[in-house]
Image (cartoon, rainbow, N blue to C red):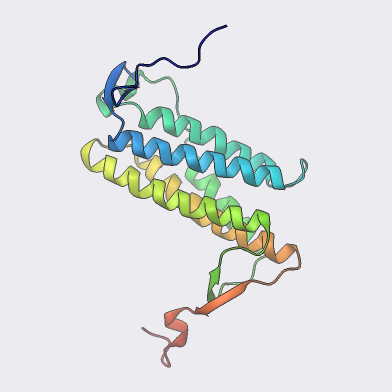
Length: 193
């Protein structure tokens, strides 16, 4: 039987593309670890949805794209041209189109909303906040080793997508959102903060 453990990380380092070893605390590893968490959370959402649900294919595509993003993030910028993986040129535009199509049937949010209400909605909110954390980690990495702009834009759009999916999922299940309070600009008498 082949062992799945290698013992190569026992001293606190791990390998990235190019057979380069870095500390497990490296921001590149932190960024990829957070992207991996996001991919898992999306997988959980998919288990809540029927196999023929209209979002299944889009969510699977996101998971596949995240695997490519992780490969590119795991590659230093000076070696990225040798990485055979690439993202579709239309990725950000396609994600925006998906957001717009889902948002078209969802009322505009008037309040901050408490995450939850149903399993799918709660886990879509988990995807949203994990995407936000991944974005912060990616920007920290970008400050030390530049990332392709589309990766940063894509992960930013994903948090918006998961927000509108969470709201739509809850509202189409006949459950009500639990508001916290109106957005600040809606509370101000002039409409301006």
